[in-house]
Image 1 (cartoon, rainbow, N blue to C red):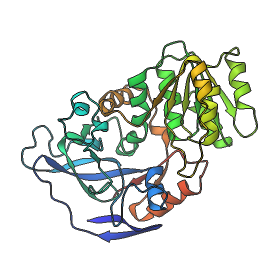
Image 2 (cartoon, helix red, strand yellow):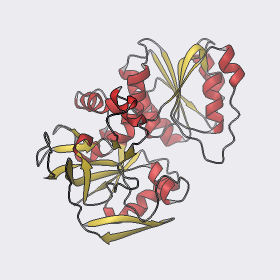
Image 3 (cartoon, rainbow, N blue to C red):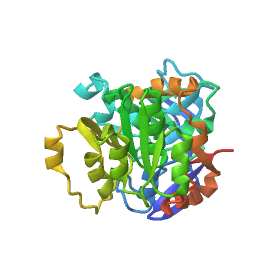
Length: 342
């Protein structure tokens, strides 16, 4: 089969590699589309040591079940699926409580030792399969993983109907949070974004107020839009030094902060602990939720979340480096790129 193999820092090669064979409890999935994630780009460029070359990356995967290993009980050849990439033991206290993503012995499809979806085929445990209806295309399915993590944090911590939500970041996560806040019944969703394209996207996907983070005083605008008290929920999908600080200052007393964006490894964070204490704030780190996949698929299928228009660019497997460059160059027209297989 063909695969885009990450062979070294800043180096991807299209290679012919053996098609994997599913073992007991595993299935072979014919990849139809794979989303390109900024995390993979950070790995490829040497900025995030979450995998080692040579390796097939790609953890946003949609396809069809092509072959079954022994003791596969529910999957059938031809099933349309996306991949919940978390592999866990199923036995520890975290797994038994539905927090499989916290499993201390867990791993993930797309990272060593498990090859990912930048290939014609991928082998995954049957437990990782999430079926999708015909109404969700493979291109749409391929980027569900990028939005299911924000969806999982909202499922876990909730957003109250009638509340005010402030979201920093105009990328895929920020756009997902905008839609999720509206779906939960937020009375006002305030978003801050950088650049005309990101500002336009925030409006198109439902933000009630969009602040130009490059040319406006964001904190002043948030306070203006919230009668001086701040937002009930403050969501940081940007992960910068300034956004981490602003997320606290813009949050109302007793409010909740959801931290999703990850700062750079060399960033020095001056965490505003005094403000957090005096304002009685609740802080939540958000990285994933094993139980959110099927509810989120149902949400998309029911028309309550627009995943289709989040796909802004398509590439062939051979052109994966072009998709990588879009992220590396911070192209403002990009929400999500998808590698579409023949």
